[in-house]
Image (cartoon, rainbow, N blue to C red; front, top):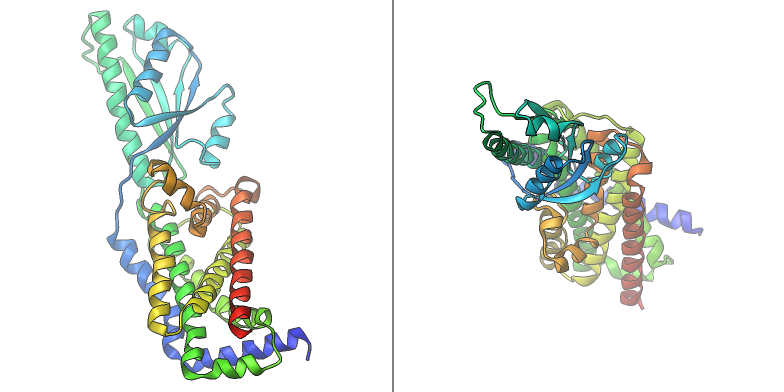
Length: 375
């Protein structure tokens, strides 16, 4: 029997098992949408850490004082100095800056002369909570600087402050928190359901004794892993697509990028999640233990270490290093880039490569662990 026929045999067996186990089918297809409804309407997070790029077209003492006021506030870190306005979009698309401060020419001369002037802050709005906080910080900082210039000029401006801030929020101009939350929820739900479903599937066979029959069959661990993964991948992909469509209908989630890129990103992420579930199944002998390990290895890292809730840049260095092992970290960047920014794969290809490496690596590790059990 060829390897392809062996894989198809395992797939048919697993599909029949899924059809008989209505609870598994319910978990994979309908529970994710239920979680999306609950968390999408109930959660609202706030974070505060901003990488700032500066486009200083004045290069005067006053413009440097304004930049120093931003940096010394403790809320901003200088990420880049821009010399070409075309770099603004590139920095925001690649998440190398969360905000861009644009200082016009003659800013210093106008401020020193007591004349009204303005500066612009362009904010990346794919994380609405961060964007809201950034706009609030910039308003406060610019107001303080404006007061300083008014005192220096010994004037009181009855028509308003000398320095006026003009904030611009990209990708999410309305600062809707759902556009920040929903991509994270998609990653969280897909990872949780994928890991739990495959881990319980294999351990169930251990408990009922059918694993011994599989070991005696003329099939290799790699073929068994592939045959186990594909049915759950198809069902999980359908479930993930339902989540995205539900988010578009219920929360007005935009789709500014390519559907093919979205399916590619989701597929790579799901293969990694299902492979992690198969790996968990090699560590446990009962469904209860498998469920606990699956939650520990999927729920907490995805929720805490992916950048979904807490910004990675604010974490201790040791935790930042650990986040490189969390696939949801890469998936969130790719998902937000596709859905909210509408950029191509050239912007986030490192994230796709990382997801592919994780998927191949964890599936290979699950096969090796299974081979040791069968030996």
